[in-house]
Image (cartoon, rainbow, N blue to C red; front, side, top):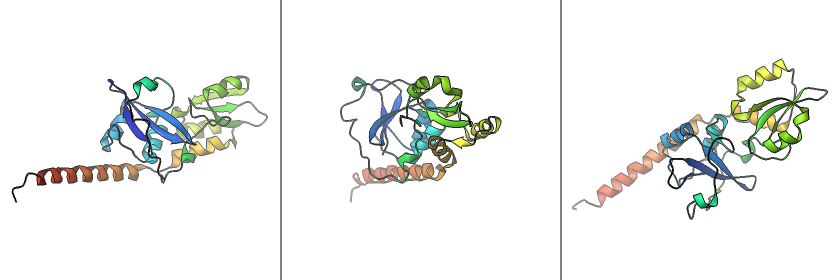
Length: 203
């Protein structure tokens, strides 16, 4: 399961998780941090993959860009310990590069082929295929309406599996997961409060 962490001495946060057997770092912007905080999730807490998927598709969690990078020196001792127990949301919901399966700096791209086609490529694969790319849109900006307009304007019907995976993520419903997490966190806090009060009773 994903784990929220805070950089030492900074008001900046990141998430560590495992996807396809590899440890992945997601940087978190202010809005993403506030959404997790609103659900009662604090640094060191594990939380369901559904919440990470939701803030990823909104662009509030990302794997490359303006966010600070994670270095070994910035990670506190013990933060590399994870609990990757079964999660109801599959890892396959995360979009990956259509060529190398990387999650780094993904763009939706239109390929110049005999038949208009769309795929998702990471930064490295975009460089390798630069001569064959027409349109390129950072994935956090590729909303459902943007996808539909692009496919209609460019007459794109050939979609790589990576694009269909991203469409599935956009269509996924995670609202109830946020509510469930917030309720469970509140119940834990209330239980802890009653337990501490009980220690001071006279009888």
